[in-house]
Length: 145
Image: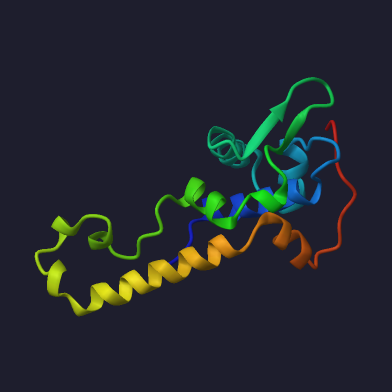
């Protein structure tokens, strides 16, 4: 199983917003510059996060984006589901009719355990936990660019 660039870049973007939580709103360009993500692609990711209620926009000349809730209230699962969708390693876990051997499949049980483990890990971490784990030196913020 491989995460999409949408999820990897989106997680980095919300980490930036988490590190700046309670300060000034961040503009797309500032996040994109810090994380080396294209502005256009980041705009799409932020739109998804905003639609899910994880990020909100602040209008005006000093506007930008902020987390909609404190970092301690947003789990990695919230972000993951928004950007990646359901975390299902095998289609039969969501739709039993997908596989005629679903009821007596030995591997289906393993895929279910894998899905449950991923869910548990993503639910056990918040964005505040990521901020604490961040070892990258904080760069000066780029506002109103």
